[in-house]
Amino acid sequence: MIEERIIRQVLAEQRDEIAGYDPAGWVSRQEESLFEFDSTMAQIVIGVRRSGKSTLCHKVLLEHGIRYGYVNLDDDRLLGMEAKDLNTVLSCIYQLYGTDVPYLFLDEIQDVDGWHLFVNRLLRSKMRIFVTGSNAKLLSSELATHLTGRYNEIRLFPFSFSEYCTYHQIDTAADITTKAEASRKKAFMDYIVTGGFPELQRLRNKRGYIESLIGAVLEKDIKRRYGIRNMDALRKISNHLISNACQEINYDGMSKLLGISDKTCKKYTDYLRQAFLIQIQPRHSFKSKNRIRSQKAYLVDPGFQNNRENSMAGENIGWRLENVVYIELLRRCAYDFRDVYYYKANPRTKEVDFVVCDKDQTIELIQVAYEIDTQKSWNRESTALLQASESLNCDNLTLIAFSPTRDVEIDGKIIHIVSAIDWLLP
Image (cartoon, rainbow, N blue to C red; front, side, top):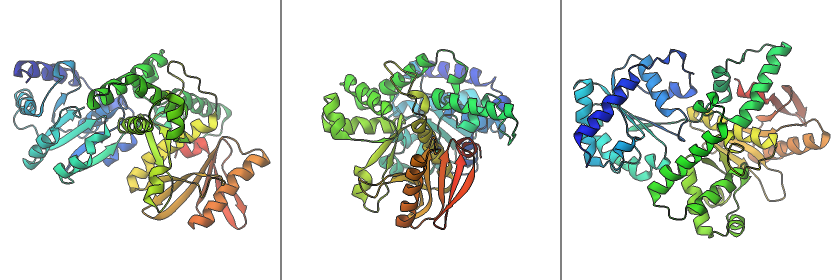
C-alpha cells in the first residue's frame, strides 16, 4: 500500500506540469473526432508506448474547455500500486482539483490489477472518465464483461504521413510546382524510414530512442505483466518479426531458426501484438480456422526496421510502403468499423495485399507496389487484383504505387492507380 503523502506529492507535481500546457501548436490527430464527450461511457485510448495517447487526451480536453483531474500512473513512485490504492488517488485528486471536478483522466493505468472495478464504480457515480493504456489486455474479454460495454475504444498509432507533414510544415496542398512536389517526395522517403513517433521527430539520436522504446515495451508491457523469464527468447522473436515485417508468420520456421519451441513462439508473438509492437493481419477466409492459422505481421511504425541494434533491413521500399498503407487503413477503417485482410486463394496464386470488408461484404481490394513501370511488374499486380475481383465479387480495385494517379481499364474493369503520396494525403 502506497502512502497518501507520496501519492499526493506525485499528483501535485503532475498537476503543476500540465498547468502550462498550451495545445495551440500541437498537431491535430485524426482520432480526435472519435471522442464522445457527453457519453456516460469511459473514453479509453490504447496504443503503443509514446504514440501520443496522453497528449491526445490533454489536447481534446483543453480545447473543449473541460476541467479535469489527472494522474499518470507510469511513475516509479507509484510502482506496485494496487486497486485499493486507487481510492486514495481519488481522494488526492479531490484535494488538488476540487470535489466537483467532472472529468478524471487516468494515464497508463494497465498495470494496476482490478482498475476496471474502480472505473466502473466511478461511471456509476456519473463521473466522466478518460483512460490510456499501452496494452491490449486493457480491453480483454474479462474487462469488457466488467465494464458491460460501457467504454468507447480509440486506438492511436504514431503520426500518419499527413500528421508527419503537418509537424514538419510540409506543404501538402495539391501544388504541382517542382519545389512543392520534391518536398513531399523527400518527406515521404524520410517518413517510411524514420517513422512517426512524435518525440522522435526532434531527436538526432533516433536509434537510441527506438532501442529504448523497444526495451520499454519488452520490459514494462510484457516481462513485468506476464512474468517472462526467458527474455533472450522474447528479444529474438521480436527482432525476427521486425526484420520480416509484411510477411506471413511461419511459426514452425521461426521455431527451428531461433531454437525456441513452437508454443513459445506463438505465445510471445501474441504478447508483442498485445503490446502493439506488431499488428496481426488475418487471411481473408469465411472459415475461422484459416483466419487464425494464416496471418501476417506488420510493424506499428516503420521506424522500427532500421533504428535498432544489429538491424540489417534492406532498402525494400515496396515492403515499407505496404506497412505504412496497412497502418493507415487501420486508422481509416476504425471510423466505419471495417476489417482489413489479405487474400490468397491458394499457395500458387499471387496474393492481394488488402481486402477491406464491411462484415462479410468486400468493399475494396487494394494492391501495393513500389513500381509498376515494367510489363512484368504491372502484369503481376493487375492480374492479382483481377483474379481476386472475380472470386470476391468486388469491382472497386485500387493499386497504390510510387506512380502518377490514373485509371486503367482491363477487360471492362477499372483499376484505380493512385500515387502513394496522393493516397496518404487525402
